Image (tube, rainbow, N blue to C red; front, side, top):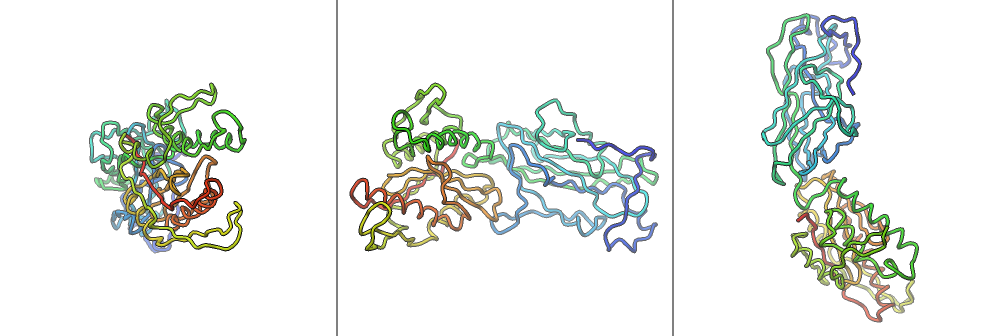
Length: 421
């Protein structure tokens, strides 16, 4: 929301204090040589974006671009990190911004000026909203770029419906004097901010999309805990749960298992007899692009001469043959793709179906969580440990299967990288 401006000072001249040690010896004449509007337009980290992911992580997996704003800026602001932003294709993205002062002045200073935002792709439509957060609905006032002030908070809206998925472009911000100060008017027009933007790809998702799937999973997991003896939820529901989650994420009841919990009727029942077959079918429908079967290649077992919790005696303890195989698979497939990733997972001879959500919104420290019909499992954490998470789920399913079917099942793991059609 636009800040209330102090009254009584002609031409918006503001008394601004001295803060940084490097400026303490600056004379009044030196301060007067400063251009009077030197803003830094940056991401407002106190607010959340909408239909977008913003990353300022800088590491091998996610290199940031940096600008040098020039010697007129204090050292604190001179090296400017360019945020990487992933935005929705079919919804308007909202990016919260903040205008900071780029130097510590002496005495009276002009606190406002003109901002200009330039997109490298004319098909990306930009709007500027005079609001301090992104939670507004509609009918908000436009932000006046010709009256920008230090301390202002605004929202950049980006409409990229005309652009293809995966398209990259940048938005650069330039500042100039508005000529209303007491001193001379500067002719300077220089960059004071930049954002690198990418339209989200087919196999990457935003939190708003995942929420639709998790809303459905919340209903399923509650019904699962109720231990029904008849009706929809009286059967082993893992493969149905995974299908319903995926269908909700992409708003599709035609190609995925669908059930109306209010009317208690099935809306669509595809063939769900086998998770591997289902994964391959989803791929053929265009909802997956990478199917991988790690048949017996990543887990082994040791026989243990004692009774386990399922009554098997002797029992078996699983171990990982090579953590690196699985971890490298995930790292390669999410590389340079900021956002959320979904993997359809089947384990132990396709006897249990789950799904994995990899959070790559902080690409220097990606994390994962594994889900089934009971909701979020205990297998979660840093992506570098995902092999242990899959191993943990395979362990209990392996023992449970021996108890209920009478034989030790195959230790296969299959994964489908889920995507929009």
